[in-house]
Amino acid sequence: MRSHLLNDRTAEHYRRCVTEGVERVAARLAGTERPFTGITADSLAPRVDGIDLDRPLHDTTAVLDELEEVYLRDAVYFHHPRYLGHLNCPVVIPAVLGEAVLSAVNSSLDTWDQSAGATLIERRLVDWTAARIGLGPAADGVFTSGGSQSNLHALLLAREEAKTSAPERLRILASEASHFSVQKSAKLLGLGPDAVITVPVDHERRLRPAALARALERCRQDDLVPMAVVATAGTTDFGSIDPLPEAAELCDHYGAWLHVDAAYGCGLLVSPTRRHLLDGIERADSVTVDFHKSFFQPVSSSALLVRDGATLRHATYHAEYLNPRRTLAERIPNQVDKSLQTTRRFDALKLWTTLRVMGADGIGRLFDEVCDLAAEGWRTLAADPRFDVVVQPALSTLVFRYIPARVTGPDAIDRANLYARKALFASGDAVVAGTRADGRHYLKFTLLNPETTADDLAAVLDLIAGHAEQYLGASLDRAS
Image (cartoon, rainbow, N blue to C red; front, top):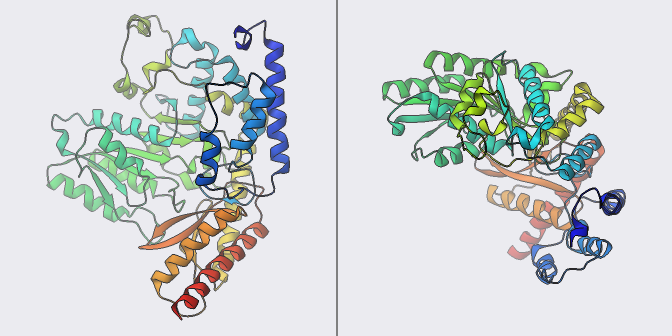
């Protein structure tokens, strides 16, 4: 069994195995004609459950053959131009190269004596990102598993910085379009069920500054402590960007920590044409970025950045076997001192290889392409009487629903749109997401693939309309 350990004696075996796996994936990518096969969980589960994990195959080729049957054939392929579902991006090749390197070397980014150069690369990328945001010379940060962890980390720091002996008085203010991880983080931090105050949004699904001001003033009057305001730069459903300068002004006035959740909108940091949409982000106390959304990185690649690196001490714990306190005086750079995680992958390497091959402008141009496509898609939807589109996109998300030509009740329209989404997914021809807006069911295009074209959008809209009409026609037949 030692022959399977990766070391100096098995390097050639490693090369052959990985090459065979890469060739399988490359062949699958080259031959993928639609984003999904349409297989159901009920159909696939017996195949997976039928594999006896206590009887190994002892052969790489046989394992890859089996993997074709239980994963590769039926995977949802985000690289396909008609995958328009969630915030999943196609990945760039330099990042996949970085993934291959980091997996094989297997550095753990908790202490210097496990990571050496990897620690310095992560720190350099943190500094680079903080500079792109404009956080100032005292800024710092750390890579995380994703936006939810980054938001939790930020709110932990905000809670500690609030310096109150009465945690029941703490409040977090966020728009009704903010990410669910804000509420989840409040619960994980031990805050009460009323800790998150939901602030109304305008017709563009952006936080209303006047409503935020009123909520902050009510906190003051009720002797509550506004520990944080969460402004979103790219909401999950609408891609909306909250008014960051106004939020910063209010946080300064009321002494609240400003956290900007830019998990989605962080691609604007490298956009050659749209960087101004993030004006005001430089005034944040903390910022979430998800490189695995708008920087075209493989999952996971995220980071939390803070204006004042000293605040990261709130997540620090010293263990004698790992990062004893004396290492601070010795200036040993242990990233675990900043992180909620201990063992942690070298995910920063993927961004490093991408920047060194493509450059920041190259990434930004790709993100600009999907934003341009969303603008074109919005014009198409706005001009098509079959559809109702909610807001003009700031980023690359379109929320819309099919509206039949004949008079039909709103509940029936809801059901038709739900059916259309499910039928489209079952066909495998395209994948779209869904959400609720104004109490009704809507569909959603999340555009993160520069290979997607306006023709793709038009074709998928026709498919949606066809499925919805089929449902409505069948409903009328049943009713008659």
